[in-house]
Length: 150
Image (tube, rainbow, N blue to C red; front, side):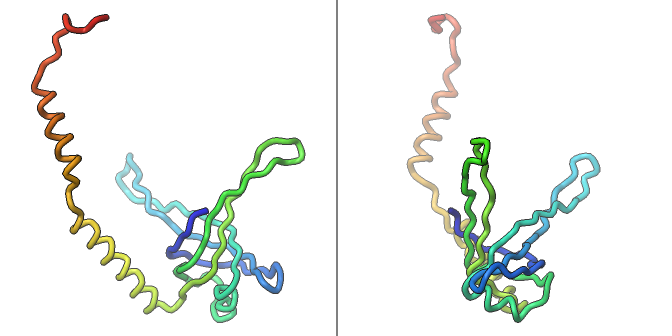
């Protein structure tokens, strides 16, 4: 299981029970085309089960609304089919989300700031420094083929 959060669009609401709604979430990712050096969009679609606070909020939004999943879970359960072959499926469960554009912008800004802090304040590990200095020292010695036993 993997806890997730992220910006997606949500559509195709379908009641499963009093406690869960089935929906489709999707997002696009820019891919660089190596030949033309242009960007193309690759879309990913997931079936999701919406429960808890998220299910209550679904009544407040329209289909194809951009949401930011604040609490979600991804898992890939495996099972054996009727023929005994192993199978698996991706399961996305959404517990809570934010749909107000201003709040989404604030969440994204906080995430960007947090990422910037972790990268700029990252200290160099002294163990890696020692290893790198030893590696450079070893590179200074050429290998003599006569020393190799095979």
